[in-house]
Image 1 (spheres, rainbow, N blue to C red):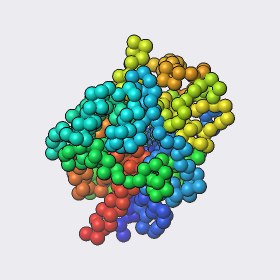
Image 2: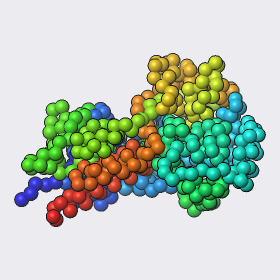
Image 3: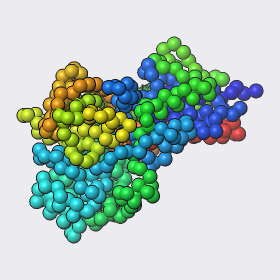
Image 4: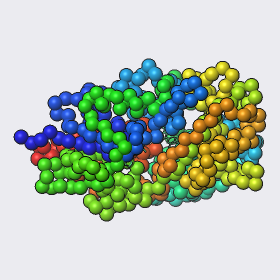
Length: 483
Ligand SMILES: Cc1cc2nc3c(=O)[nH]c(=O)nc-3n(C[C@H](O)[C@H](O)[C@H](O)COP(=O)(O)OP(=O)(O)OC[C@H]3O[C@@H](n4cnc5c(N)ncnc54)[C@H](O)[C@@H]3O)c2cc1C
């Protein structure tokens, strides 16, 4: 009799945990044909970037604080885990942008920061005449741009709408999602709607407007549900609950253990062996859900194209969470936060803060009378200044910058710094080709890639990627058993 299948998941971030969930039967649960599953994680705890902890009398997320709810994966997983009654919709909308030293409300009708209605830009006082002219030109005599193959987001935007809108309005939003620069990020992978609009030719703004032709505002809310959600108890509770239920299903969960090698063993009981410093696990299939460079190192001997994964760079970021007294701090009257364009000048220097999130306005369950819970985002792919500052020095610097951004800010009554080294993968121009070649190379093997380095940064995309990789492995094992 052939032995029971054994599948190893390398990496216990949300993608690896979601892969283990799918391998163990997903919503339906395990059956007699469910393989033995072992998940191996290098860090002392599971969940990767998902991390909630007690802070100033509430449970606060020190990694992602919410997720897109109009993509199904995160909401579906939370529901399967029995957490649907803890889902909370975002409690505010809109944001402000720091434009030439003044906070201005972001205009309506932006698609990832790109304006689709020139009239909305009239409200932005800090915008130059030449930007207003670029917008008019895009509507009436659009500049030509040829995009037969992948190009940077910045190259499309600069040509079509000019540098000021590109760097002051659009980069803070689209670049902020992965702490990257629009001049390096792939239009095809990061902003497919922009890429398609550029390929179509004509007015970028009109094309984006028609591609985003879903109802906006309250109508969208009614038809599509809220755009973002969180979990009361923290986004980190998604990983915690998943961990508990995987353990109940008999999944072997190992932490504090790095996988050092993945070896084909054609003559062994299992076709693969997965090595750590102390153990070797035989595997019929492997899901590699680590950052891409680790996946590249583990698989590169299988095919040259896999070694290109090593070059998928990631940006480091730090989140500085602060509590201020509501009596001596003034926030903009509406909105969930502030976007700060890169290269914004500050006291003979450049601001480190790239965005502020008003956490207790965004998520009502975090609100406490008399307090403001605020988070500053620091760090970009080409700005590593925060890494050399101690936590105390970083808090001092950020508080001083918040004072500039908001005007009236008291002394914080609590502060915490959470650093995320190499936390945000960068999808450079040509990213899809690198990923597609790596995936093609793995087709003959029972090894699949999962995680935020491939199919989109963000919790829903990472969950989707983990579950698809697991489903692929199950199909691969079924096919091999039949042949
Ligand atoms: C600061 C920050 C804020 C974010 N905010 C949001 C947000 O608000 N909303 C949202 O949707 N997304 C957000 N994201 C993105 C989201 O958190 C990620 O896309 C997602 O968590 C990635 O999950 P993952 O499993 O692919 O990767 P990771 O969480 O990085 O997991 C990979 C795991 O592999 C492990 N590993 C590495 N090497 C080995 C090895 N050799 N052996 C074993 N294990 C190994 C690592 O320790 C890690 O735990 C944010 C990310 C960051 C960093």
